[in-house]
Image (cartoon, rainbow, N blue to C red; front, side, top):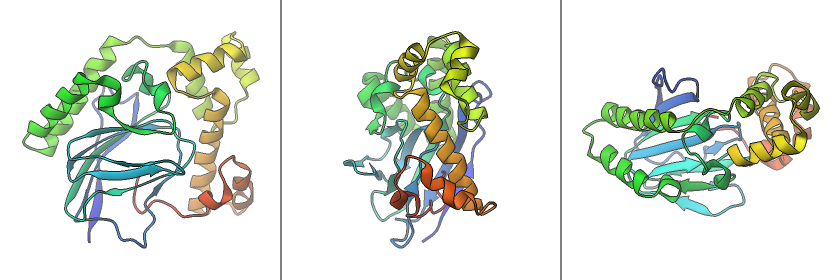
Amino acid sequence: MSFGFKKISPHPLLAPYIERMWVFESSGKLPSDDIKLVVPNGNIKLSVSYSNGIIASVMGGNTFRSKEHNIILTGLVDTPVTLDVAEDEKAGTIGMEFNPQGAYRFFHGGIATVKNRICLLDDLLGKTAQQLERQIAGAPGVKQKIAILQQFLIDRLAIHTADPVFEFCTSAIQTSKGQITIRELERKTGYSRRWLDMKFKERLGTSPKNLSSIIRFRHFYQALLDGNDPFLRKIVFTITITTSLILSGHSAGLPV
């Protein structure tokens, strides 16, 4: 069995909002002794399986199964997600991760409803998503499929205006690696904790405090994998993710 990733550079208009984009291909299911685990990192994920389907589940939730050319949206999660290809045969998937300050621009009014959920884009956008799936399915190659998907996102970006306060706060949380306090965000923006909570739940489906916890976990987890600081092996357990999940392993080549 073989598998691999190819990184894709997002269109310049999308680059400020998409942290990473890739194509994943495999000759079949990942080996059963590998852990197919994607840990929380604060990003919202969109994927299109152009060959085979995907089977996935949020830890502790229901199993989700998609068909070929379904477009899948994974909301902000604060618990690990397991995934694999649906059938033990050749598979190919286009994937991208939106940073938390940018996802709302593309899925206006929908991101808040998919926290800790995996769903079809059809559930949020209806006929618009169905039409996009048909266009991608009809494209002759992966390059053309990616171009169609990116043009769709560029068109969505033009529809919805930016929210400078929300984007400033989410950017500050990321830049500080989750260390900035809500009080500091209040001071910098002039808005109350209650107002910021409401804004975050509207745009992201969670509070600034919860996003900060996820971002802290992301950096501690990465440092733990890198093995650069033994102290982090102790401090990581203070993050509000259960110890058993943290120690269960890391992604077998999957984007974390």
